[in-house]
Length: 101
Image 1 (spheres, rainbow, N blue to C red):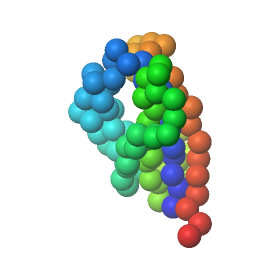
Image 2: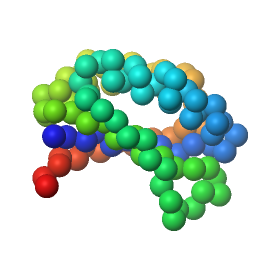
Image 3: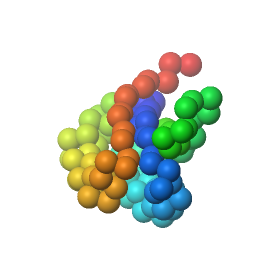
Image 4: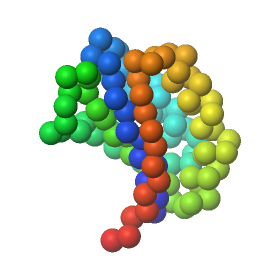
């Protein structure tokens, strides 16, 4: 099992709207690609939130092939929507993790 982890920093002025968008639209659309079986949205604690909160979205893929298919076919459109919706008020980076135990 693989975890596509996206770490996200949100500007304070869009925090509540962004949370609603994540729950109502973005996560649902990512799961609808069929490449992920479940997700978790976590808020990082013990970090400097003075310039906004930090979250981690974790999407679980059954195989590396599912993850690769998402990256190849779907990721660019999601990033474009993210930029068009939030601009520089939302910054993110992603990592791939493999569950080993």
